[in-house]
Image 1 (cartoon, one colour):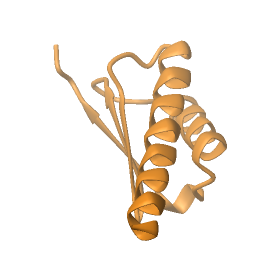
Image 2: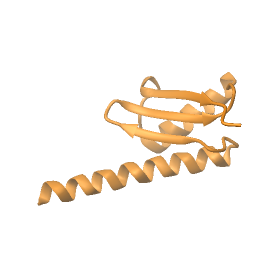
Image 3: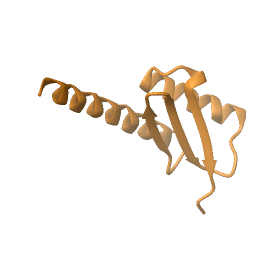
Image 4: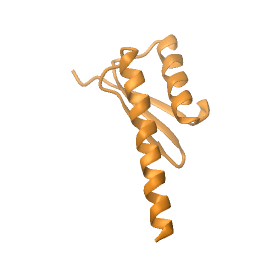
Length: 82
């Protein structure tokens, strides 16, 4: 029972970090982005045809600050959904 409670707390914390990063990314102009945290790192999907080096740096900074995950464990992908 205690393990189930700890799992629920962990999942809630992860969901809060994902949502927080998504909100900050949207505030910086990255609309329709998705942040997914797993045991191996963070995946970020951004609705854009491409990203500049400055934009990539902004995304990495935001995700790092909100999740504490190292830059090397952050994977950023683009998808042009238009």
